[in-house]
Picture 1 (tube, rainbow, N blue to C red):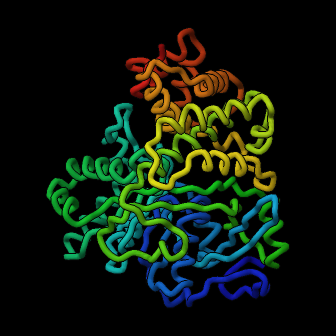
Picture 2 (picture 1 turned 45 degrees about the horizontal axis):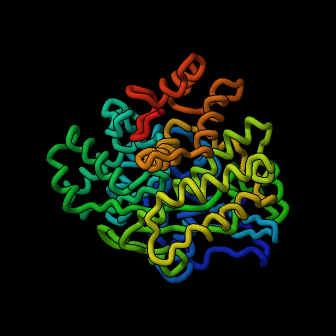
Picture 3 (picture 1 turned 180 degrees about the vertical axis):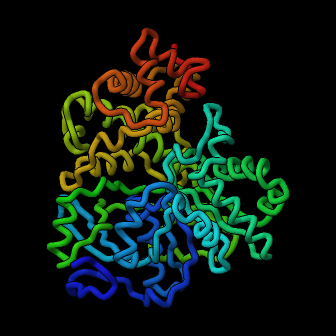
Length: 439
């Protein structure tokens, strides 16, 4: 039996505390992978269970039909399993109503964005999904492509304006430095080229708040699905597995209505930057270092790598001595305690987070995770031994027989294979742009 709205659920498993069928869809979320379903969709589900209404989610997959095939036969319902050394938890989440595959139904995606009930369009498309060139500006040729987020959002916004509807909040939930400002600038570049009359309306009617998102979400395995099936008595093809910890910090700058996410654990703040910078440079920077160094030493999972006595001191130094000094902490933001908590989370033996999953898209992640920290120290005549070791491990990874899942994979392998690899990758005219330059 496959999980669906009418499936009998064991009383021990929490279920949505609202009438799912009575909710309008207030959110369109582009990139409805495991992370969104374990993070923003959970906050939205909790907000509706706490009394908010009409914040159902229409999920959009730009290319792959996998999530639609998982969730649509289940009426959008799926389970979230939390795992820690102290035990496990399981709940059902009902915020997602349906999933559209943009490649198959492009007009349906545009219509969902243009719907009068829609107030927010969210994005979890990874760094490469923003289609930036080496200089950080929009790759306009790629942005005009059939699977570009800009194509759908631009057409949806144009339809809203033509119908006299208000603008939208465009909510980036990706690990980009200044993700709200970055999304706004990129979206505006696209509109200036494709919908020049829409740009002033976009500026006045739409908002792009910054966010910081944090939850470790490994890829779900068949073993995970089998465990969920045992607990539920039904097969859940959309199951996600995550840690107990979750954090969402959002700039309080919305174009219109929004769920009361702050009532269910999110933080609404005036300035996200200190939280975002700490996460990018400490958590994400450490994660990428663990991935490449750990893979080089034969480890498969994060908890194995952080337990290696040759690796843990490198990661601790990266967080405490290299990344933390570059961060202007917000009042009450304790970076030492944050590092302690990260080390505990990395060591969670119940969460099998594969290093090869973290190693994806290195060219898109490394600038904000490592190179900005390196540049800060370089300006002060200082070195970062841990990040330098991580860069060496990345180059060794590119030279290895490990699969390289990166939009620049072929160019990176070629650059790494020859002499002067660091200069060819990071130097002037290199593949990865940064204020930092190799010595």
